[in-house]
Image (cartoon, rainbow, N blue to C red; front, side, top):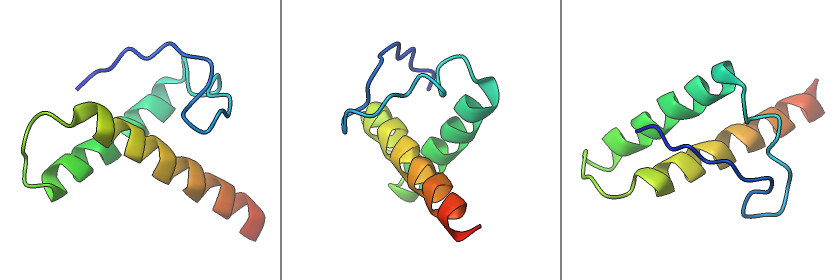
Length: 69
């Protein structure tokens, strides 16, 4: 699973430029997307959905972590 998403805005319209070209961030998303895939029973065909869900989850987690610090 290696989507080459080169977009300036995500679904909610927030800039994702910090994620583009950030290998550590992409690896974190890749790992979470794979976990989601495993949780779904390893059924193929939803890789983009898994990737986008992982992005959303990690973004919410980062935002929540910053507010709590």
